[in-house]
Length: 161
Image 1 (tube, rainbow, N blue to C red):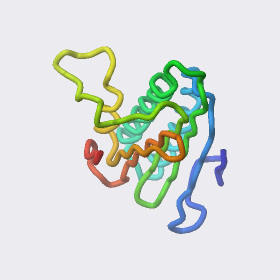
Image 2: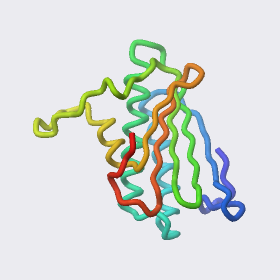
Image 3: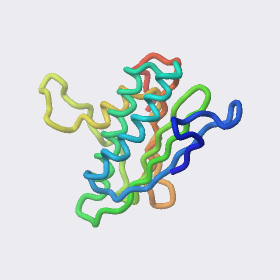
Image 4: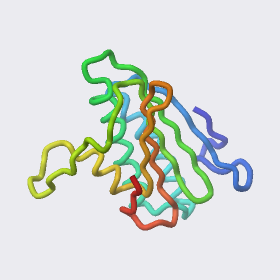
């Protein structure tokens, strides 16, 4: 992990994004370590007046769902591989990437959940799409790359999938 401040992320040069990257074993017990780091970044952005606290909570929830999906679905039936987490704090937005080496994922094949039935599971992609402003999935060099963006001044729930 890299950071230019012990107190929290900030932009090293005016307009230059701050980037963080770390890799964890693809097991659920490591999710909370990554979540705690992202919570620290969101808290810092909130205290700086750049990201409302409720938007930070949505970013964290979307990240948790993405990490869960990587571990549970991408590595289903396989040895657990790594999960790479990348954060980018830019002047106008926060980008979160979750990257795994698991099975390919086709977002279009995931049906919309029946919210009236209050399903026990199956809400991960729905939550991600509704809590983030932009969501993009790509398969790059045999890896799943889920990119989620939260604009600092956008209304919540405006995801472009």
